[in-house]
Image (cartoon, rainbow, N blue to C red):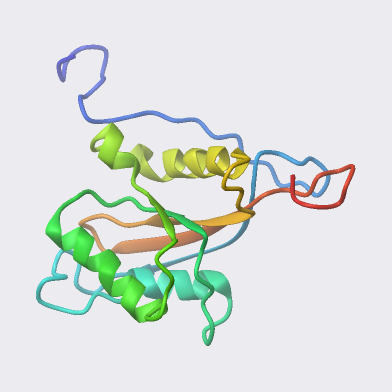
Length: 168
């Protein structure tokens, strides 16, 4: 495709999510908490300590003292040194004694740069991951970040099974 063909640009993706506020429908996943902040030094992880994403994650847990380590995290980062270093700084800041088992999923590693669709596609991937039965998990963290200042984090949880009252 070229830039002029039907308004589609290479490297962009499209995704559609249906979000509904409900207390009765189980859905694929529940967004339980979310937070956003600004990274003061975007793209400078090799020169400065980047704190924005760690702060967004901390705020999203609603517990400044004890940020739980997620079983899985979906990250918007590519394989660039700066973004890899930013995630390393987040892990050292929040979970310095973390176990090595945190599952890290990077949609851009297999889809390429997907532009504005990164966050909704990450949420869709998170819903699919929560539906896996082997290595089952009940919640995961979806992060947002780029070479721009905004950083965000949201937690997805499995909805309860209506017949059992437990996560499906």
